[in-house]
Image 1 (cartoon, rainbow, N blue to C red):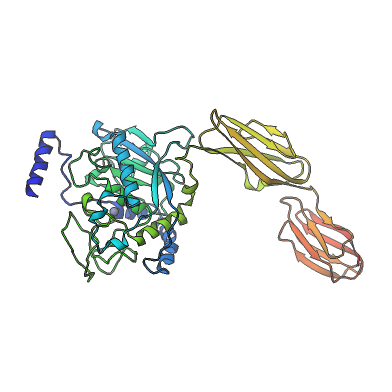
Image 2 (image 1 turned 30 degrees about the horizontal axis):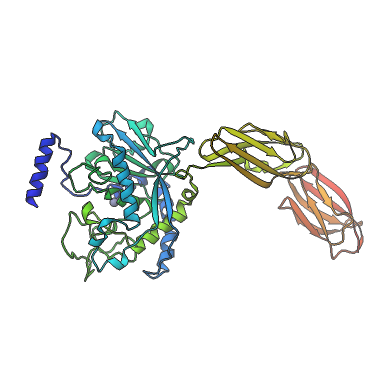
Length: 497
Ligand SMILES: [Zn+2]
């Protein structure tokens, strides 16, 4: 062991660089400190964070350990943002890709070192059913390698200012966090290995940050230290999916990571212990220092538990479900559209609607709209304006295309055009009288009186359409007094038997 350390120093010396020596204090994950910073800087973070995980936690507590539901495998699109000042920080594609491979092995329990999980912990070890894919499309719809490279004048980045996540502060802005997991890679101050946001963080802060020297696995990772097997990213993405350190927050046996099947453990484990180490009366098997959420060396950690897997899956489904519909890795083109204002789908005859076309995946070159009942009936603009002159419910269709693909989105009865006057029907009526007001006009009160002026029915009109029950009224002629933002209106209606 001592010889090995000496060798490291010699190698570092020959390389003429101090960067290959490990930090003296062991693994430096800044996530706990970073989350404290977020609480200071973002007043709503703590509550959002609690809401994001509370229900997941509760649901898991209902289930005995070992009986968690297996979930369908999900694949999370990833973009790596390499931010470099010195050439050595501009790590190779090969090194980044070796990181992706490690993530897929570790999260699917296909890592070569599963054999190092002690027999007594193997029943708890999990295939999390979570995978990672490299984005092939950027948020603007252009082809991408899934790796961005940004040269910066900044020599190092800090979790306190989180400056790597913003172009304005020498880093690079995130890609849409509802569709991508952003992983920034740079030179971190104080030899921090990495840090991650937790569920509930603001979009601009969401993602994982890695020390460039801890990315990927040897031989692509050439740093001669204990963190050159890519486990820092495995650990940090565990945080991104809500996991806490396996010992909890403080150095005590009273707090926990909230996961049923990880042993209670007092504190972090540094280096690489041999055999069983115990704390918090967690015998006979002791601390699970082989867990990815402990602080051991990359070569000594090799499992997530079933409980951790179920928790991460739960957090994904509860908070990051939009990522399931991301086409960032599949390279499709999908048409999307809405109206400029959501209320514009319900209009009065003669009104105009402003449509907004958009897309997911690859960027289209052409837009082709069809507007049933509208004028114009077709358009090739991205955001056309259409007039509807007749009451009815109308279909809208958008086909977008580029040189190699196209996609059609059709929404039935998307635009509802109402009469421009209040409708009262049928007349005569025998069971119900229906009052249908124009879009967005406010009738507040409806009274039905007989020819003596006696009020027989008196109803507030909460919805656009009201059904007045006249089944108990004798046949005859009645008066409807309708009052609202248009003043008072009188309609005669007949009830027949
Ligand atoms: Zn950590």
